Image (cartoon, rainbow, N blue to C red):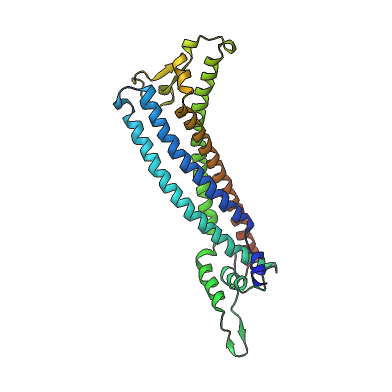
Length: 273
């Protein structure tokens, strides 16, 4: 019965957002890492014969891969903190509305987050239950949705830029794939097959003096048919989907935390704007 009552305070929005965040970050970081490795191999094999032409590109790719490691670690930790914060503030909010009042953890969290007074009986201060004390202690660290709202808002703006940047390689590979489709079906285009090219230099991937820098005609079509190109293309699409899922999860976290913060500020004890 006690477990059933505790489930009343479960933050279902935060649970869904946490699962979506973990899934999105894992998809973005894992697929993004492998897609960058595949891009490096394609550049080395088909678009440049001189190592100095793509030496800087390799350094950038390796730097991004290390950033991916840090991003994955940070978001898994921060997602867990947001989930914990959701449990604590949701319990306090539902205690205010009377849905969570009978649980020990709900009382401890509400007293910590909303600033409620400690109960006193005729014989002096009541001895708090050990679980209630634990909840109060943890609530001092996690029962501040206003701080999480600000941090999550900043992270959402930053991740919006990441989401936009993750669309760039998808756009480049899609243009290359579309060009290959035109080469494979010459009746659908008026241009000569020899003039249909994929130029890595025009996207800033390689410097303009790189040789050959571009691949045209049937040579480009043969590249598009390789497993390396197909795999890298699909990995970038998966990374883009992962970035989108992470962005949705951050927005969900921010909405849930903002709601809890507003309720606690408006209806909690001893709090003012």
